[in-house]
Image 1 (cartoon, rainbow, N blue to C red):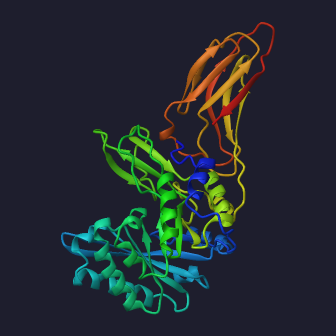
Image 2: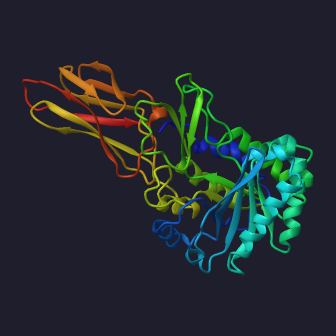
Length: 421
């Protein structure tokens, strides 16, 4: 996949610049995770069972609120308390930005307050750690949002009420009032911007914005958590080059991606493993935990595998690497094969080079998004044409990306291949 989120060393340097390195961090950095599935199938229960030894809190999407034609509409998720038995959970209400049009008047506020009370009362007592509002409030409407938070907090007392926060809020004068209402908040630093055109690279996480947000959060002085992504995001464009749809949770089976105009944004497990490892040692104590969005389940086509999240969340280092080789077929003919030898999903190599002792290949072609870009005596190179359209590739995956034929009267030719990121 196109490395729209090229984190690595550059990411670490940028983001850690936003965290005070002194004093040395002496508190743990717990792992929390969002459960965002709308259908609680057996594979979700399996993921919870496999992750509960290293996840401290699960934040469950419980309902979504939107306003259509002036009327509130609630979509409830039928979560299964039995799956979360003995686990600490946060209950999340997702509020769509369309609600901002109400100015959080009495009717809109009552709708959400009643939903919050209903949601909490339906869950087993003692398991609920907090009620969280996930609402991308427009910057200019934070004063209105403060009224809603006050009402929900009063209605649910003494249960902790928290909220997600966008980096842009931290620069608003009204944010200090909002922040004073909550014991802490979740700073969301992913999926804040979409690419405006297909050929313009946009990061799933903006490095400079993340750096500045962490600096501002520490300065404000209220405890916070940071939400980091585990997912991929497919942005589809229409024939006019404008964003038509964004797929971050699943891709419809009927979506003809091979013929559509799209780009793929994703989370770099290698970069974030390094980032979280350094946060454990150097981030301000005000950073209380990392909340991962979202818990991977089997058959999730836009997410890391669960074992990758486990390694990253627990601070394990990840090995990265691609291998390439030529698989000989009939005399003089060979297939070019690449293999993903790393520990986590990774971008396809941008270049694969082939070397041998002998004349130029008498025939060659590329497959799977690659093209032959240079051919000479003893040399051939294949380049990935449009990295932005290519999803990350899982560990252990092998792909044939081309073939060549080399004829030499002196006998068989040994061809050496190298994959370059």
